[in-house]
Image (tube, rainbow, N blue to C red; front, top):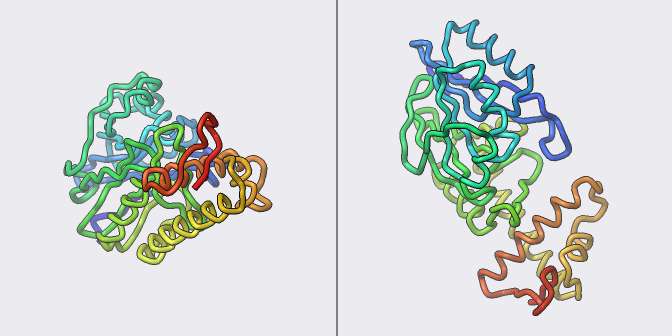
Length: 273
């Protein structure tokens, strides 16, 4: 990355089975002392203290917080940050049913907007699929992409169809990132990714392979989401089975959109080819 663009990773201090080691937030500080934070975490006191210390060390002031999407591990810390930094503005792509829970005044971000952040422009990309409001932030000069929940190195991303997830859109978002040929991905979970093409291509192939498994499960007579998930996710920890079922639903909805599968009449959770 260029010397003028040096994002500082600040942990949100929220480890869990679903967040792994916890969320990454990224502080970008410009030469004039203006600072931008990407993602708001969950309001943990340690995150707030780390943010305050980083700003003080760099003689910087927090001017804005850019939120990749409205899920609680990315957005629920916004009120606490706003109390600590009342001059800061908060921005994300609108998702009204999620945004209302945070009692925040959000500035609307959308596709193509260009923001000044930490030594150069960030371009806003609408990358739906994990959630309908999901954004990525592209620093073209260093070819760095802040990817939110699009990728997690060494793991997979849940597509929560019952809460706005869409696998068709998600795969299109991955294809879009791949076409931009980034040099570095900075995800909201897990380590930075220095070989984006390999990881993004692997993600796409993983989804295609999972789709083949879902089709094979249907052919084998597994018609319920639960049965399909159990036939595919052997030995998965019980705490993660709900996420596995959501991923199965995501694949089934994609197959339905493509005319390859349909729900069994009168059975909300049973499917057939």
